[in-house]
Image 1 (cartoon, rainbow, N blue to C red):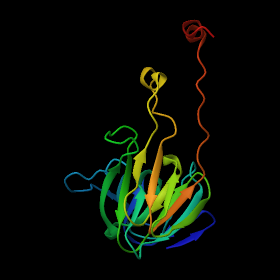
Image 2 (image 1 turned 90 degrees about the vertical axis):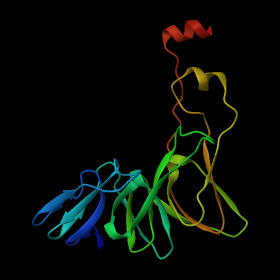
Image 3 (image 1 turned 135 degrees about the vertical axis):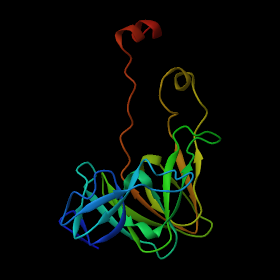
Length: 203
């Protein structure tokens, strides 16, 4: 596998890819059904067999990061571009809201080979030493080694209950030793009441 001009170039073989991949390929490409019970990332990642060289890239996530899996790596499933199918060992949901599946993140686990992540922003690799903690906004998390993070959110307010949105300031806390890959966080979406809501809230 090589990364050239914003594309991950792979050869013939069996691959785990994001939807719509590869973008271009030589020969024949076949999509296979992913078998197994409770394959949590089945709706996010495809099993693809390529008969020749293929090019993988995503228009909306143009930045590619190659992560070697010398140690077990947990990767955010929605940001996986391509990885060898044989490297997959499982998937799980990481809860950002404690004791709730709301806002949970599907994570794919790899224990060999490598994985290429496709992100909206550039990525940074952060080393977390033994005894240290690192807090990361959920949308910025890309991949990590070590123990799974724990979710944290402040006390819910009235608007968090009334409006169809998740709690503000959700965080993932990583505990060292670990390596964490992150990308830039998204700007928070401000709530702008409509004319009707202004009347209700007396604004």
